[in-house]
Length: 503
Image (cartoon, helix red, strand yellow):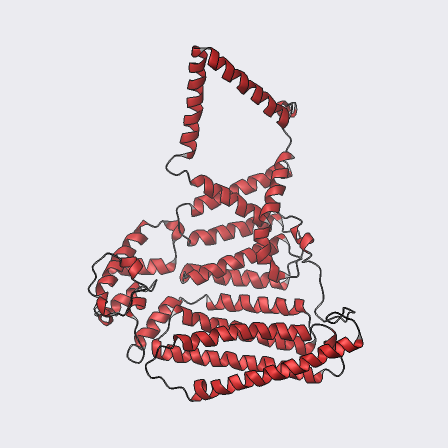
């Protein structure tokens, strides 16, 4: 069997497996089986490519942890992180020598077109049967079919009996197409097509990486170059650039110092809550932080990614940039405290949990930026370490089932913080906790100020009490989970169904 035929058979097998695992099924055990299957196939195909690097083992470990999270906690966050890690790992299988690993998860989607093109060319290289080898060719075949169709049309117009025969043949062919594409499960064809696309992108190695030049090692240290500063390469322009950095970073440090002092006064130690909503209190701090972190990175890289790093008398600007980054880290702590205040008065929620995770990533990124400036590392080193750290943080934070963490925390703090019935009653994977604490939901439905979480689910149904929503959800969940098959299995659903069947 030729190498091209083997490749085609592997792609067809992978597409069939994709269709079998995901057709009319939600994500669960099928996702992990597909990932294992693709990983085994890619390992068999590329096992002799090169030696595995430490980062390959790191992502294999992260993917394993993430796969367990998908099966156990089965949150949308865990599934999203798992798919990201899977794309990253599979692309590392295709191109193990790639050094700019932060681009690999983007390369996988970009590889779709080149891989399909390469797959099509592989089909054309398969040795054809003898009668096909003597076939006149595509364009001559098309021209011949056009002539045949022309004569059939003229003969049909001239002879009624000939028209009847042709019409019967045409109807038969039309019925075949209708049965093929209009049967009850016709959308299975789309799954096969998507399976081929995904399998091709993950299993066919193309020259995409070579064209993107992501395998070239740029080193980890900054290299002195003769690139011009702004519009000129003169000494005077360099010192203008240096002095502008001194002026700008000094003013920015003063401004952020005032900002941080105010936060220290009114957020850290002088905070008073008078029953007001704290949504803007946390949102304004978060969006300010996002902007400041981005601006900090841009400014620090702008001044310390070129000649200024090699200037022997750059210590003043260097210290100003370091202080600027340190004050941004202080701002991260302030936003952390804002979020803690928010949780203390309004309990925990998914977005508030997400803010904590974002703050961890932002603090880590700024620390890496500080190390880059202090040790003279280049952009490659910084992006690589920020990416690796972010991948580790996202993987670890996707392990817990945050819905259950939120539910337990809010139940325990129901007397000291606002208990949002509308939000709590709709938490996924928590029906057992909701039923065990059902007395807390003996609360009139119309007494709530707004129903942003339950309106879509129970619009048109007359619900008088939140306990009724728990019963409705329990029946709906039981019915939905009983209809799932083994492909969709996960422990979170299994636990809920077991509880509902026993209560």
